[in-house]
Image (cartoon, rainbow over the protein chains, first blue to last red):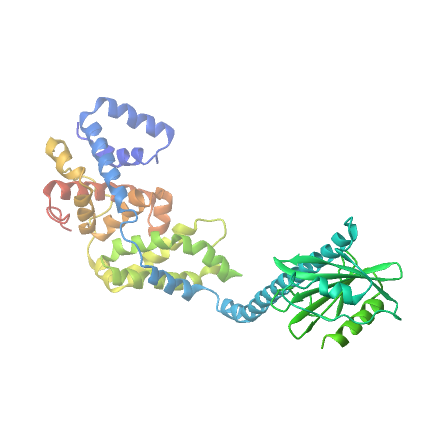
Length: 249
Length: 177
């Protein structure tokens, strides 16, 4: 059977472009026509192998960028110019805040540790290892126990009373802790070598740890670092600090 | 807003358009020129694109029209097409030996070569239909011809392609225009 009519119809049938009744007619014809049934098989075969024409040629990334740039809004670049400094500023702010926070966190953790030493002493069954109100007894007691020496002021005639002293460790470094009472308050005088990293605890003058509400004051004198910790009023701590500074210059 | 919208719709078609362009032009440089010009024209005329209609067909149409006015395209226009309605040719496909299937049809490399050698009016028809899988209606819109022409030209193109594969030589062999 010569099927010139069917050639286009067969293609359209294969492409699913025929109306239902047309498709049915072609289908029926295919069942009876050898020529057309081999024809459709071959068209389908070629069609299948034509799939590899898809994506056969790929544009270079460079060319894509070129066209993309060409069609993208020029305002976009202005937008970039405006937002870039803002972005940089924002990033810097975040960075600085982070550093400040880390610094603050380190400092407050040092505060907390120093305050712990104070609390630890107060809660201990033996508040002090050397019990004496006499500075001439307390100071020699530390000899051989700590690798440094310090001076104590004369407390008689002041509002302070020396209760005694004990050894403490801060970050594995030995130090002296003196307990001084002021009225009903106890003040810890912590003395370490300069090499001991007390974090930022000494950075400021007097400070108050918000979490523990202990007042802390620290300073450096030659090779020693002093830290006072107490729940006493700041003026009381400050005054004691002044007395200690006078004899340890 | 138009421009960003255009970019959003048009850039995903980039690979397909480039592929089609190189199939039409036959080389990378011309394909790049064609694609670049197509995008420039499409952006310029984006207002005429009706939202909700087929962006791909719309872009193909611009690409194809741009191609026709290009150097290669003008040559194509000068070639005389066999009348589209003529469908009397019979390539005696029923005489094809089993070797035909084994050696030629299954070999996509030879199919690609044969496709590249097909005259543009038939090549583009096969590209749009069998490669891009556009519907007859879409092809008719892209090429601005009636659906009947799409059907007959496609049928003819497929026959020529098979004939070229059978002959193992470029498609313009026996039935040159």
